[in-house]
Image 1: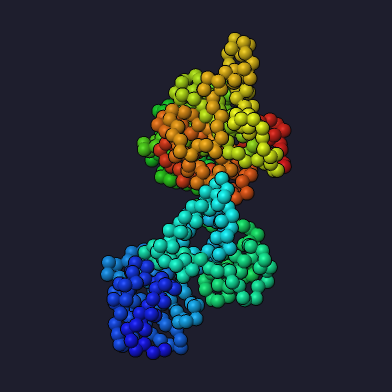
Image 2 (image 1 turned 180 degrees about the vertical axis):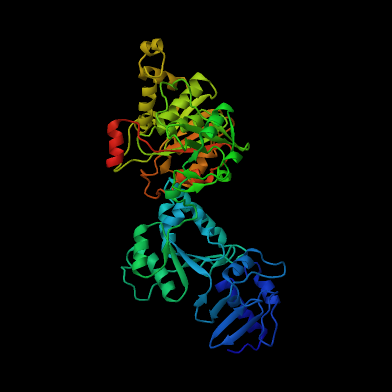
Length: 558
């Protein structure tokens, strides 16, 4: 190929710029103004030094050979570009053929990833995100929904539409200074493929297969386990979308255990505090199975102290934020609406629920561990007895277990009554003879007292459907079954909290009914890890079933 005129080099530059986006922070005009002719040398600042022709391949070289750098040096260079250089990944370009052997990774993103998190488009930094055209078709189908999938589908479509003003999506559009790009790939598959291409999912896999067979570093990203299994059969690298995932097996449990001398436990209760510095050198064991040192303890984390000479001699403390001290935890001396903690984890939970300085409490545990009952008891105590909050608001996501029974008759309250029945059961239990004084309990039934609280506005049952856009001040909020919420939904709910409001999120990450979530990607797990160590947030994992002997047996054996 002869480059005898500046126009030839401009055409090549335009091809490189549009097809491979190696000049992420230069306009095409700036790139063309840096052309040097007629020697065939293309220079652009300090980043692109030469363009050489060899056997039909054009090799773009940086100022220093990428092959001579270690991966860490290359990563460092990308993260800290110099003022007089342009970040440009090294690439071999086949002129006219439309294929490349590129050092970047090419992530083919499945529809379910974008429906789970519309920000997934921008989570791959300097690499290329490839969206098969079939994914756009599926997003168009989901955009009509009124749930979270519909909102996320519309969000992705709007963002892609904005990127059309930057460049052609079929050729790739660079969106950051590291050269990260987003490209829509047509599903016109001509290469032999083992799967039926009439199936929409297989068309998406076919795009990944074609790119992989062309030699590109292709990785298929999907939350569909079966799709990843198919990829393995086709020898295509595949991964789950892990940008907002947490390791459910190592989820923060909220407390640690320490074997220590008897004098340490006695000092905690006699002095009403214990400096964490005194515990340096000792090893703390966490519920997750890990080990901690004293300086690794975070705010509002509990510590179970056990006498190394007498296992029956124990103590319980909580890390007081910003003080570097443990304070003793004894639990309430009187029952809270007839409820007393039955184990050490329930004592921890009650301590957080009754502390007005802790504005966010998360509780997880298996069925029957007391999550909802403890939260409602503490909320009723704070609203009705201490009057620290104006009302108790209880909400649950509308997520059926198994097959849905269909539309429900009646107005909003009548429809909501069936979904809120577990909450009504707990409130009725607390308002029975267990929670009230003898005279009060004899005068009215638990149902009558509950109706009175609802009519007076002290007890409010709300669906999460209508919470967007609200500001909720001076209320005690309980969100039950929070494991069925996505990270975005949890963010929406917690960001509704107004001045003087406390919010409790409870759930069991082992019982998730939302088909798009699992133990590692649900909003409750996400919140626990992100809010760990915050001054106004606390968490406890409840592990022992206390509902009944039969419930405990079922939890262990079934």
